[in-house]
Image (cartoon, rainbow, N blue to C red; front, top):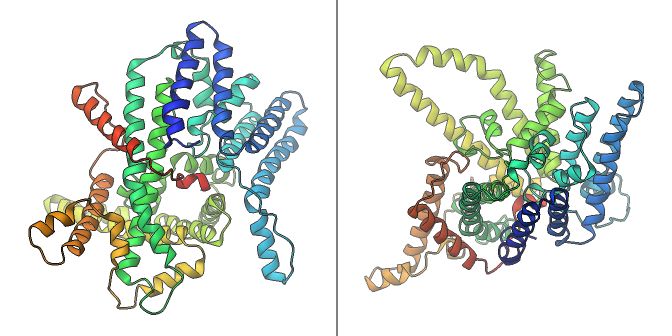
Length: 505
């Protein structure tokens, strides 16, 4: 089930809210939690009922392992932890990477092992990492005496189940136990509706618009010669379109997840903090998919030694973390190389940070220094944004070869932009207005203006506004009208349901 679907908005969500708070109003605490668990499993199983076997099996095994830590001897705990991690990693490997592994074995050794074409359960990377964090915390003795119902709801709670954020037990389970959160809070409900509506608009009205251009561009991406090949401007448009598509798609999902949590009086951790405002790769990863960065830092980087074992080991640890990040995102060499590139960018930031700080301390003094600092920050932003764009092109490409060919194609002086690509951004009736005004080539000019307008709006929204987590949501007539307006427009635009991009990871 998708957040951006009629069945979710008009059926599932109202029914779940009514049932959960209705049971709580009757004093049925455990029953209300069980109801929320059942509804979350329905939400997940709606995609494919067979997915339920995977997630339920995973929940049961991990819960039993967490309980076993309290019963086994100290000398056996480490072995039990390794067993738990191997189980979870094996689960991801089988469903997500088995065919990729076999395919590469066949390519490397000329073998012909059959691929299994395994259906990837949605959100497996998210709920598996969440459970790895839980068993590690259980090994450390940091988890409470949670019931199976509480644990199962923690893993499967539907707002964060399929595409994050990756929530820690200490952030969610205590909220399940908080009796003050069992009554309808109209402040939280109104804030949740506002957040959900804004997230829905980001997805439906913005991300999906850019997605149309991306789909058209990559349908032509394997033609590398002649007029059918993408020109340099077309590649830039497609690259920027994907950069904005994945931004507003993931940002929209994060807003909707946070809004849904607020409707149920649950606070879900921030996962997205205006990442295109970043002035470095390191800054970008403090803002993009923040709970994944947190997981990789707490459960991989620090256990590897972090920065405590010398510079060389620190850089190796950083590269391991970003290699894991790349692999986590998908079974393709594009994701692996994407992770490596970001790891190298992170290492470069770390190498140059000391020099940069000293340089800015000296150059930034006085009034002239203030202006100079602004110029340097603008250059930093431009370089970081360009880096992120090129890396996103690799992330979206079907293969490393395709990505490299597109980059090389950008050096070919062919600047035509086809109307089929521009049509993705068409503003209705704009060409008709120009025709009435007697403007020559009215449709072509209208399409170009539509493109520039879409790009300008995207840049302004990314760079000039606070993110939705930082906003103060006031219950006013203006807020009501605005929220109702974008909600109605978004719902009326649900002519086709497009999957959130991070559902694939």
